[in-house]
Image 1 (cartoon, helix red, strand yellow):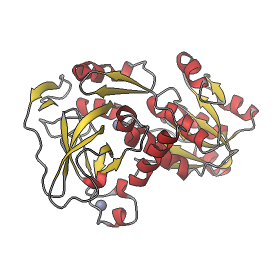
Image 2 (cartoon, rainbow, N blue to C red):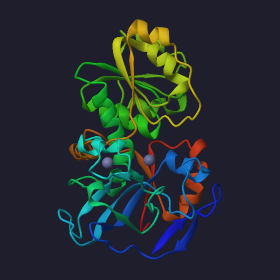
Image 3 (cartoon, helix red, strand yellow):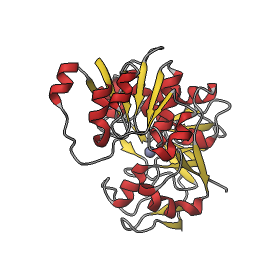
Length: 331
Ligand SMILES: [Zn+2]
Ligand SMILES: [Zn+2]
């Protein structure tokens, strides 16, 4: 089969002919139909995720079950599935309490396991969720990494109908979907983005702000009752200042390795809680797929061919695309 192989960090992955995975007992082989390109892939390519080389990158995928190994129940060849971005043991205290995203034996596709920038991928059935009717492979490919993470964040901050929710980084792949997911939960959404993306974001949000000092403007609307912070350091202080007393911030998609100064006094005075979200779990992915199937969230992505991957990786930090970039196989 064809697969990209990374031999050296910061050098383009090489499109290679490699052996197709066989279905080991308890595992399935999925023919990849679509694979998302994420900032995490860029970091892995740069050598930040301690990937052992050579490696096939890619952790966002959806496809069709091709073969099932001995002892697999619940999945059959021909089933359309979305992948979680990791595998988990199912037996440790985290897994048993429904927090598989904290599993100490968690293995991430494309980093600890062969990844999705290949025609086929071997997967643990626990990490695969059937795609409901009406959801495309392209949308399903990034439902785990992008949507399920936000679903968990939205649940953590307790969004209820009528709440006013702030979303920063609203023009990014995470942000554009966070705006829609917060809306799907009944929130009035204030989106903060760059002027270049304001028009696109205004299709989904109730209010759009482009100032770097947005807290005054938010306060004029009555303040926010919760926030999805999808930027991190550069916006966190303004986010805290925008919030009403006792509100919660879900911290998602922040990949900046630099420490961020936080006004602790302000946090305490307002009793604002910062709640980090590493990823979604299996039921968050199921819920994300249902939101897509119901049409409550419109997936935003651009479609690319397999041969574009090296360029897409390289362009990641300066990309001005809207939403996710998805590689469609067979295109
Ligand atoms: Zn990702
Ligand atoms: Zn576990």
